[in-house]
Length: 199
Image (cartoon, rainbow, N blue to C red; front, side, top):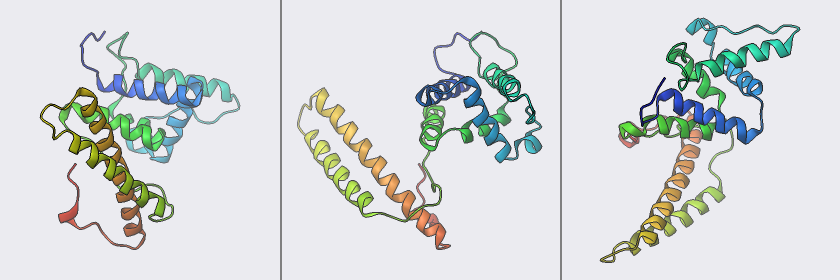
């Protein structure tokens, strides 16, 4: 059993898959089926050797067996063996919705001082006026909150507000950047290396 104070990679994945399942009000079987379907989309059986029960007439039995297997792999609290194979991690992440996946990977990388960003979202429209308006508003609010910290002794509330406003500005900027990159990809234009964001 694990008793360390820091979270293991499996614990982070378990927390995010559990929160995802609860937010959708899904059974274990439904969530596991989404992960297994993502594994199939990634050609996981061929590339990893990890295979799940094929579609049969006994759908409930197949879903239960697959769910038991996935949840057994995600349990590193009550045992030290038969844990999640590392080659299956991309399938777990691919099964999650985009925002949940990004937050999960951020939590995995945070102890290393790293975070992820979205390079391009699913196909959709280009940059929208609402995104630009939102970016301008968020950046203005972030700048105003940061200026408030220039006082000699900013209050804890001012620091929390500034952190929140700057974080919201970053999210808005990332959304605009993702739309621009999506437009660039659609036009066959590469993001110039000198402008690539290392974060």
